[in-house]
Length: 182
Figure 1 (cartoon, rainbow, N blue to C red):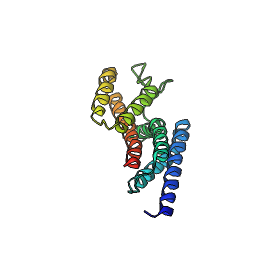
Figure 2 (cartoon, rainbow, N blue to C red; figure 1 turned 90 degrees about the vertical axis):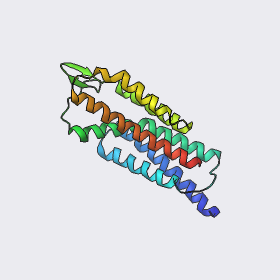
Figure 3 (cartoon, rainbow, N blue to C red; figure 1 turned 45 degrees about the vertical axis):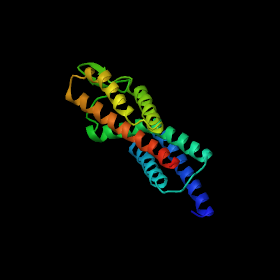
Figure 4 (spheres, rainbow, N blue to C red; figure 1 turned 30 degrees about the horizontal axis):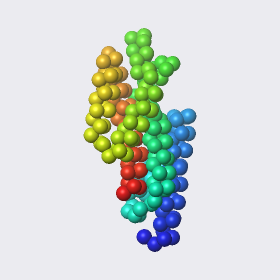
């Protein structure tokens, strides 16, 4: 790749990833479809750009792209899950004060925000470390730890939809960093 194109590629990749991270934070603060869609478009653009073979980008650029991808992965997965749940349930599920759903007068799935942040950080870390087998352990731990809380099919479906949306988001963001290092 000619030097000018290399520089343009690096600048574009960094700008797209800065946009993905920024839009993910904005979507975190205001989990609406437009913010989540904009963050999704930025992440998809980052994936496409990172998939272009550009040679060695250097330590500084790959570190910056990785950091931005981690921010997008950890923070943006929450809004992605929220929007996926809104679309799936069409706002038919009542939420409690802690973001959980109300079931038989009590709130279940409380603490999902913190669990989501940690699971997305763990998932991205596993992918970046080149240990995708650890994903099975991560999903199993979450499933075993939370699945017994649910009494209704709606709660189980919400858990599965939210988990998958969150993990797919984090995997896509971590994939950007992996592709940029290749």
